Image (cartoon, rainbow, N blue to C red; front, side, top):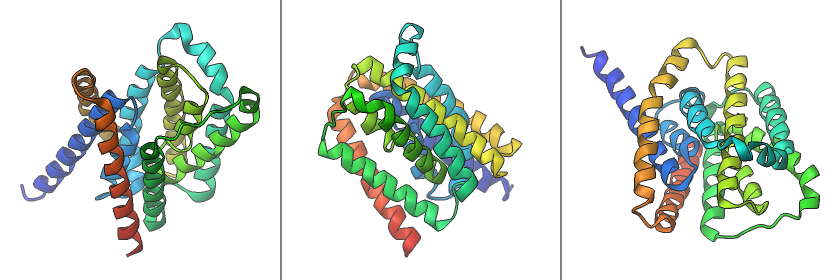
Length: 251
């Protein structure tokens, strides 16, 4: 009985993290991998946290890739970035290994702070369409490398996609496509480094229910809360959490 209590607490805490992460994604359209990795990495190795992330992230992001009628036009705009993500993430996984160690926690903290500061400044980038052909793969490769190192998919992909001038629904769909690509390649990288055993896959499946429940709650809350205020609080919290992770890893 004494051995089962810590194990039960571990899974209860992980389920709570995915419920919270799903709620954030339901409200603002992104954030499930970011919140989950940030919080799980406080008490487990980043590689283990990334392994738990795979199934909830894949399912919730596949959900976000619809509708089919607009899938191909959106994919054409960000296809080069997707190729870059695959190359960057696989190259990073082979070169640097799966997320792990103090340096990975520092990298994750820095990525969180950078993402939060970019969101809090409210800056809006504008990308001329003529530059998309070469810049998309470059941004994708950088995003893939960050994914391989930290398990976080947002930087610099989200600022780049927002700079494309996509309409709201197309932007949400583009993020779903990009995050799906990152999730699949992260799973491949973890497996290639021996960091995605069957037990981890089972735990990842178990985390799907709280993540979907959180998304449903977030969708309900989105209609009742001032999203701008919620997003600012979320980003400020991420910045503080990222700073804490960097200080703790370097201390």
